[in-house]
Image 1 (cartoon, helix red, strand yellow):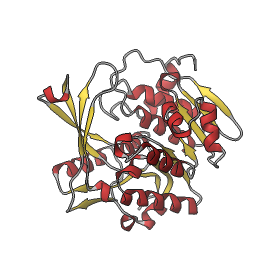
Image 2 (cartoon, one colour):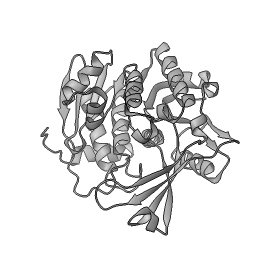
Image 3 (cartoon, rainbow, N blue to C red):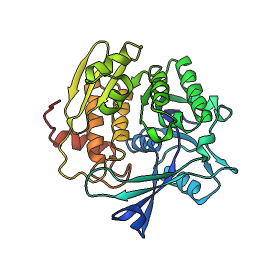
Image 4 (cartoon, rainbow, N blue to C red):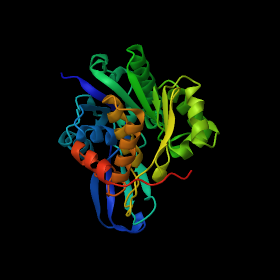
Length: 321
């Protein structure tokens, strides 16, 4: 098997997007798409030409087959997606909006993906990967997926390979806010790169400014912290450098879901190509801006030449934070 640039794991779901605006209970027709923070990252990286792999479990149902087919069409490696005969694939409903965030309802409790466990960890397969990308979502799904996450993280650290971590807070999946904060921080502090949004950073650390949030993780040994600031761009800080990179002007925001995952795609791709941190963050801002201009979680993610063209031709906002 060929080497893998980035490996990630989590829960993929079938997503039914409303074909018209309005409350979900009033919608008659939906379009099925693929959803999942980690699949978004894998797809985004594959579009940029990287070898990306997604590890998970799906059920023996139409949703599971749909997920595998969709990922394969995006050239994401699916070798380690296990078909589980006992549990179903999760799905979600998503409203269509003209502004603001859409309404999303999840049907994922007891899903096949929530039963991904250490016994499913293929050490030889993970050994092929250069970089591990993690989110906080599997940590909330079950004790099995949390243990799998810790095992994967520990394995990568033992190999001296890089790990990126996006908190991707999902409060409704946790028993309490304290459990969420404590657990997310345990994992974040073990990563090389941490990528929280500003509000996530405030909730997780208690600090208010991007610089102080970053310092909280840097003091714990993290190499680089990048705080997503939405339309204002992103703030980065490491032990040796710090700065804020402007966001891009977007006239028509269609769907904000997937923008943060797109940001991770840009940052990870830049760091893998050994670009300077500021150039990697600029990539993240660009893909995030492209993402919010399309309906669907990852449909706006660009190919490499599209990304380069956008960066070279699109104006950036001035920073005001």
